[in-house]
Length: 318
Ligand SMILES: Nc1nc2c(ncn2[C@@H]2O[C@H](COP(=O)(O)OP(=O)(O)O)[C@@H](O)[C@H]2O)c(=O)[nH]1
Ligand SMILES: [Mg+2]
Image (cartoon, rainbow, N blue to C red):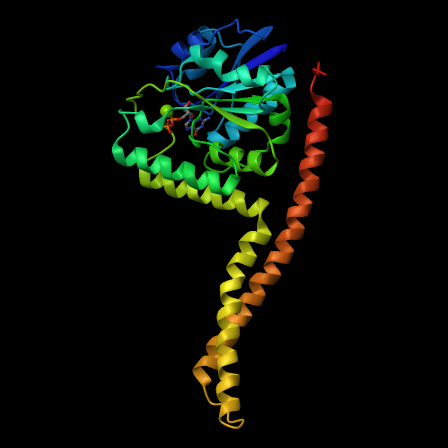
């Protein structure tokens, strides 16, 4: 493959980004050229200058902070403009080792995968508190259910994407890209594998999460929104069904009791509750139909976006 782009999304990372950039190998088996791309998300410090001095080939700057998800998409767009065959995302805080990149991209270079997740082996990460470890493992389990993928470390920021995967993915400007991209990859049937990597301790305060609880809520919102966009029928019919069933049972009860009393229909509370259940169920059912049409629309838009981006990529590998 011709070009590997290592992209680094950074927010106020002057202290660590230089070391990260210097740790990225410029020669990787199966790759002709390695370039480093930094997306500086409106840092208040001199992250961009430090990155350039450390050897970054390009620093794209958002004048204002637009968030990690948006920065990630800016990175993919820029790397594709360069004609990247493989895009590696690595964090600016030194949590991941540039030295692990050759192992990370091996499956993509060999044509065995379209996305490779660097698996931090969370179970054995002693610098994570037991609570953080449990929540991360639980989160990955939920992402496995939602995406249908066998991923063991869903929020790892150390990943590699093939050009095809980068062309197919579209990251909405929500909280973060990690879970969105996995749900999309699962629903778009991209080939995802994991390789074990080393994760270092990063003592500086997180730029992304205020605290663990906030992080979980934000990620749950991202997961919910992305899942509904791809599985509207399952979601809304799943919600409608209990209401329809409860409504039918309650109204059935009124009718059966009424018939047993020779047509004297009495049970008003059941009748009211049953009717409300049926109405809510029907509304959710209608929502399912409309959302399913919107899903179809999204499919077409994704295909248009894919073809348009593909047409703009220079030097495509056959
Ligand atoms: N562009 C951009 N990057 C961010 C933002 N928040 C975090 N990052 C970067 O995303 C990576 C992961 O953030 P980090 O603070 O290490 O998150 P944590 O590892 O989950 O605590 C680092 O490279 C950060 O510089 C943001 O709002 N915008
Ligand atoms: Mg970090």
